[in-house]
Image (cartoon, rainbow, N blue to C red):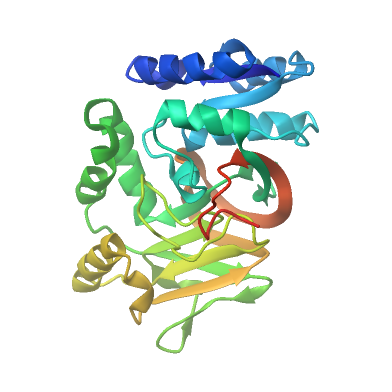
Length: 306
């Protein structure tokens, strides 16, 4: 087996020891080359020149998403993509049951069973592997981005606190062509303020926050979470319930599932797989079932696809 391990140049030096451990294990079972990239163009060049080598991503959700996007641009999503989770959050890897230990994750790359996973495609040509969300979570992610180098995974909860309560955003949310009904006889029709909207392929965001606990990245459906908790006390209570994994029980939160999701209003800022995107007036995502595959441990958690 010949492997080409892709590392993000912007990842810094904090994970060098973990990367070295993963490479040590991979080299016991395969020929290994390492490609360090820092832009979509460089990723495109790596994909074009990889030949018969299988790709392995050493990084977090953003790195995985970037490599999947490059493979998609090349029309080359057929082969399994190995993942060694070296990012700050690693939400998709966690949902898939991949080990946090880099050596153990490398063994899964070599010995795991490929499983098909879904992909969220947007109407601007982008792809999402784990989740995209709008609202208070985007402001929290912006704060966390400034703190990741200093605080690591703690940057996410600290960022959420620094984001403050903030106002709700009047957004329209439609799933499979129908506006989402929110509690109180209202609808997410562009007039009702919303605190947060999540379109989820995987269950967690921000390093383990279970925004959509029931989401399965291999079931052909997106889980859409809409929070209308815009009052000051309701926002605080929603945040506490979210951290405890009980926000779905609140009467100002609704979770629906579907194959096509449209979000409009604003312009609205988005966080896609941990990367902050420029605000847009509208975006639509469609689920492509089984679009790509990842080697996974033989004993899979429930949320690891089918």
